[in-house]
Amino acid sequence: MLRLPRTPKAVLFDMDGLIFDTEALYRDATIAAPRNAGFELPLSAYLETIGMPASNVRELLLAQFGKDAPLEDFWRQASELFTQMVQTDLRTKAGVPEILSFLAAERIPSAIVTSSSRTAVEEHLSAAGLDGRFQTIVADGDYIAGKPHPAPYLLAAERLNLPIWFSLLQIFLAAVTVYWRTFTPSGS
Image (cartoon, rainbow, N blue to C red; front, side, top):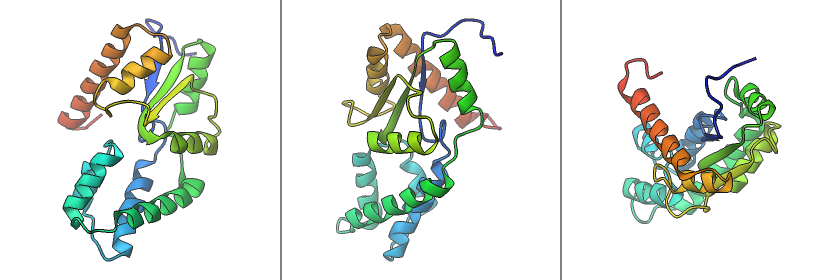
């Protein structure tokens, strides 16, 4: 069994790309929807949207396609495509079920902190058989400002009855992780 040098008070997980391998599904659905209507969304523009709240994505896409672009149609079609892909292609990242089992056995609470909607989180957890494995979910609409702002992490800490220093440490660790992945040659 895994042994840790210190027992954490809790573990906060991002969802997309950490728990679930959804990034390729989102990418494919988001790029296909406008293409089906005659618009081209370059991969570079799509990559800018990762982790952004929906309102910021909307602004970016309007700048890309023009103010009269039928974004609602794109959203609807991308959502339909993504939902179809989730049913057949959604996968948890390697080790996630084992980590969650370890946390449960050690009675270490966990939370999901995500920019995705609560509905998406619940659908993904259900599809993967992970319902009830997290003590709380902080999703889009639950907080005043999206990640990387500390508000989502602070809300998760509050819901888990954790001291404020815990959330600040999580934010620091998240920043270090982003830096490491961005500026190291291997990205891991």
